[in-house]
Structure formats: structure tokens, C-alpha cells
Image 1 (tube, rainbow, N blue to C red):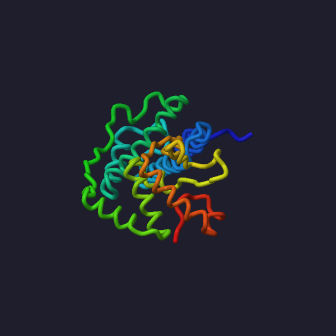
Image 2: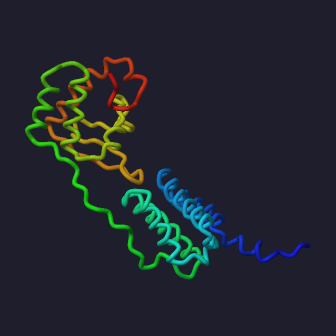
Image 3: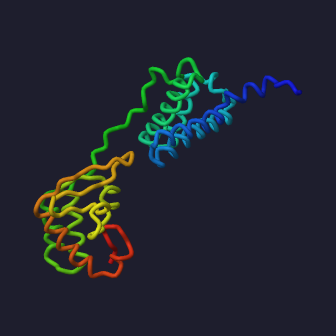
Length: 231
């Protein structure tokens, strides 16, 4: 029987081996597919960086300065928000290695994430908003009714674009229908696939009702489950 060499033994602690196990852990925690891709992708990107720069790839040999070098490289190539997300993913990975006993201390202990500058998005003025709504609500065609309902949903809920875009409409199936006009609520799927209930006011309910009446008459309403249909 061939004796295991020191290289064979060390490969057990190689970062790639641990990343594979980390992916299984994420799946067991039922985290979202996006989180799985982000966290495991970051860990693999980190591994490639270590190899390319001649740094240790055995998880037990990785030190804080290796992580800091990786983050600094990210900040040179990407926006701070992207580097911050990569930091969070790597932090989750090393937390897992600590919990699993792969390392005695995390190389990211007491590290601080990259600072994200405050960027204030442009705000639509109230007069512009009123003009936009008036333009949509003045017409009775499908596109105008849809846009008026969409704008009012944004105003009332302040929900994320992805949450509103993914609203489903099944008028004859209360279980899967995300729109409840009688109750004045919308059901959206937020971050981490968590369901949220959003309240909407009477004017938004009316705008949605006007839109849905036109939506039912369109052939595509029977083909697609999404609330917002194209023209």
C-alpha cells in the first residue's frame, strides 16, 4: 500500500476541498441560489487569487494579510459595494471553517468591511410625479393603465424593483395570486426568498383594478403568470 505523502495529507485542507463542503452547507441551510453563487463564487475567486500570487491555499495557513491583499485588489478593480459583498461572502466562508473545526481562528477576526460611500440617488420631484401620473391616468389604453398602476405601487410600497417586477397574477387561484385588491395587500418575495406583505392604498387598488380589467382581455394573460404584461 502506497503511503500518503505530505502533499496528499495537505490537500485535505486545501481551500477548494473546503469550498465544496461549504457549498453543501449553504444548500442545507436553504439559502437562496443567488447567495450560493455569491458566497461560493467569492471563495473560489479568493482561491484563484492566492494561487496566482503565490500565497498559501491551505485553509489553515491563510492569514489576515492574505485576505486584506485580496480585498485591496478588489477595490482597485471594482466598486466599494462589490468589494463589500465579496468581503461578506468570504466572512461567511471562514465562519463556517471555524464552526467546522477546520481552523482554530478566523483570519478575518476583527477585520472591518470596506466602507461604502453614501450615494444619494436622484429623487423625483413631487410636481414631476404628479405630471407623470396625470399623463398615464388621462388615457384609457392598456399601456397607460398599466403604467399608472405600476407607478402607484412604487409610491405606496417603496418596494424593490425586483419585488414588484416578479409579482404574479392568478385571479382564480388565491394560493398563488400575489394581488389581493379586497384586502389591499401585495405579497412579494424579498431577499433570501422571504415573503413580505405590503399594504396599498385605495387609489393604488383602483389603479390596479383598472389595469387588471384590461389585462384579462389580453391573450398573453393566459400564457404568463406575471402581473405586468408587455404591450
